[in-house]
Image (cartoon, rainbow, N blue to C red; front, side):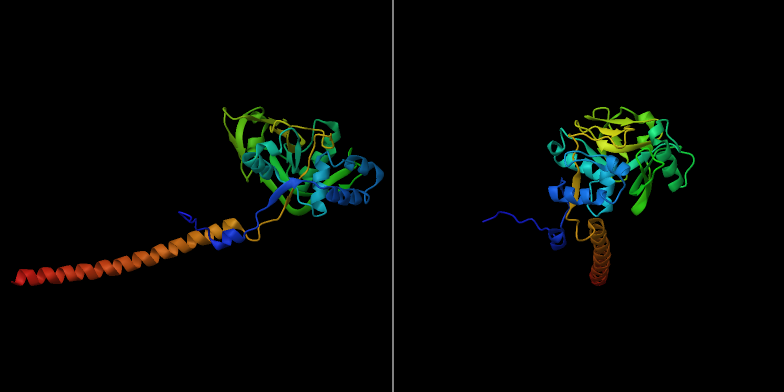
Length: 276
C-alpha cells in the first residue's frame, strides 16, 4: 500500500504539454513541396535537407503550419536534457536586428527591409522579431525577404547588444532576457550591427552573430514542437491564486465572527464574575 498520495489538480493532469522532437521525413517532404511554389533562385536558398537547417527553412516550416521551437523553447530543452541537442545546431524562427542596414553587403537589403517593416530607424538596443513570413524578392541576395506573418512581434532585447559579446550565461528567459553568470558554461556571441539569425551551436552556445542567413550543413537539425497545451497554464495558476485570495477573505471573515462571539462571551463571563 502506498504511504502517500500526491494530490495533483485534475486540470493539470488533463493538460497536454508540448513535446519537442526532430523534424520527420514526412514533414521534410511537406517542406520540399512548399519550396516548389518559389522560383529557382529562391529555391537555392531553401534547398536544405532533413539533416540541415537555416533561418529561411525554419520560417517557411512555420509558415506551412509546422511549428518549430523558439529560442526560449530550445533553451528549455537544454535545461531539461542538454544531451538532446549536443553535437548539432538548431535555428530559431526569428531574427535579431541591431541597425537599419548591414555592413555585410548580402544582408543590407534584408536589414533595411526589416527596419522598415517594424518602423524603426534608430536602434539604441537590439530587437528580436518573431512571426515573420517569407516573400520572394529578386532584389534580395537570397531572393527572399521577410514580411509580417502570424503572431508577428517585436521584442526589445538589450541583452543581445554587442557589449555582451562572449559573456557567459546560464539561462534564456521567455522574454529574451539572459541570465548572465561568469560561472556559466555557455557563451553568447553577438554582432555589432545588422541582422542575424539566432541559433544554438554544437556546444549549446548561443549564436546571434552569424551573418550567413542561408548557411546550412549536415550538423543542423530542426526541432518541432507539437502537442500544444489544451489550456493556458499561466491562466490556470492565476485562477488558483484568485481562488486562494477569495478563500482567505472568507476564512478571515469567519475568524472575525468567531472572535467577536468569543470576546462577547468573555465580557459576559467577566461581568458575572465581578457582580458576585
